[in-house]
Length: 358
Image 1 (cartoon, rainbow, N blue to C red):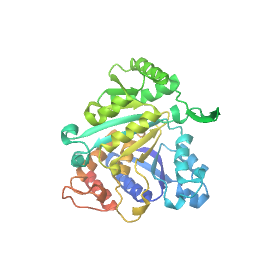
Image 2 (image 1 turned 60 degrees about the vertical axis):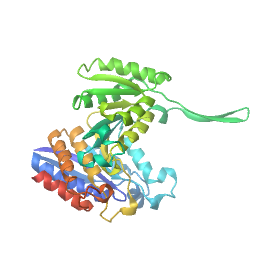
Image 3 (image 1 turned 90 degrees about the horizontal axis):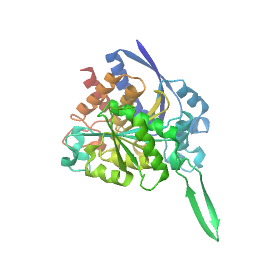
Image 4 (image 1 turned 90 degrees about the vertical axis):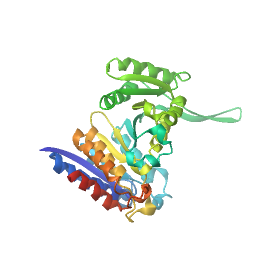
């Protein structure tokens, strides 16, 4: 039997609730497809602060590094808002990404057919469904470049530097090309090569690497045009690959096309197949413990883990199909509508499992 090790980071707020449902669904597909996942739980965020005084204990990093993949639910909450920045829960999230070398962020923007009416875009624009993957470089660019302030002649100025090396561009483009090979075979590289030298190097490097992927159709857009095209004609996109700052903006724009943040999964990958998987939404402390949280983004994050880290493609596809079917018969409060019954967090997980078992 195939065996995998996964570290669970429940975190704060609704984190433990939604992670429980993801584990429930993973147990179903383990039984169905004949593999085993061994779990270990570790602390992060506010829960770690309460227990250890820091948002990311060394023991958590060690546990993650010894696993095949990591499932993280959510961090943060009002309780810790007055702490200094380096001791707030969010510091644990940034720290774990750095400690694990997670350089590639995958953000799918997908509309499941039963939810197409929740999208802010007209139905004739999105059609019956929509599925875009944004691949964002996560550890370079302007967020990590040289920065500072200087004063000259009594005038204060500030600067942040956008800098990318060829190896940094190659490794993120490689991720995008390989993902496209498993999807629609199209990659759109987004830059600002008409203005920025860093973008000119980005485009040159992506074009050169594309020669190794003759089966992939490569196109290029300036970031401002891409932002417009995402709302004008999103179905033209399959995989979008771009820099840290552009990806930060475009992935948020693309994800909101789906109509609900409660449906958005994500992955952050390092070298090899290792990755950390988490829903895009936050910890929602105002509804924690009330059974109102939508577990589907967490469940879909688990499906991404099966696909990209554990190489259990059939199991991942079955979860996505089960989620689509579940949306036709029940919804959590955040995606209520279409005269479909409203159910609790655990009931939603049960419905997905029941569909998987059948």
